[in-house]
Length: 281
Ligand SMILES: Nc1ncnc2c1ncn2[C@@H]1O[C@H](COP(=O)(O)OP(=O)(O)OP(=O)(O)O)[C@@H](O)[C@H]1O
Ligand SMILES: [Mg+2]
Image (cartoon, rainbow, N blue to C red):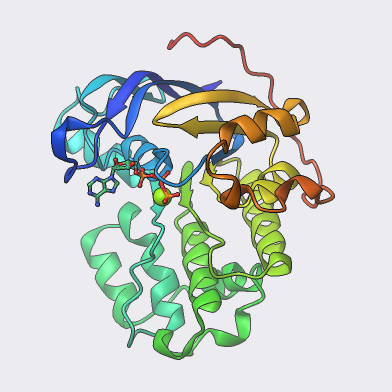
């Protein structure tokens, strides 16, 4: 069943001069429970795409449909409810430095909760077991009561991923989760994220710089270049040639990625058959 549909969607960065589109006429259809990696060179529009899907950025053209509803055509209240069912983990996670890890993780619960429940959980974290389980998936359970400013960059990044899991969102959008992680930790983090999404049935869309991780940990790759979809294919169909074309003139970003990494996420109850070419229903 379809979760998400972008039809000729265009958006620009709020600070963009001369009206340059960051994503330009993007068509994309994602089924419920699909696990998708979005790759492409720096400036290709990956973050903008996630922000548009998260309803954090109003498109300048085209249509976004989430679970059959158009967030920009419904009331503010309905749009707020739609936003409450998705979670966007930004490229630079906003973790207040003096906060305890447990509080930072449970803050991920805030969008779906009532104001009072949110406030209570901030001062008296009652869902400690939930936070501990989420942290354990990223090998961070022992840091539960540590202060965020005493963590390394990679540890903070893993706290941000644990936060994405406790959100219990239908749609999890993660922007560049691996920049501060070494290759082994990066693989573990993606494997945990993908397994958690599969267990809960959530749809997961992750932008990645590490092409080798996208190839080894995901079933489907969407490639963006200059704000447009260059290819959208099951991972088995993504050839080295396609990747070289995607990163042409940005070869340094492709690095040694074509050397390959063995698949590290066991295939779960997916894959899902998705009808393409897309039609927004
Ligand atoms: N701060 C900004 N001010 C103005 N324009 C911006 C800004 N950030 C992004 N843009 C525009 O939006 C385009 C897409 O940027 P976006 O951040 O979505 O790319 P990205 O693929 O996420 O890049 P990266 O891999 O570096 O994170 C850029 O090429 C640029 O034209
Ligand atoms: Mg980005």
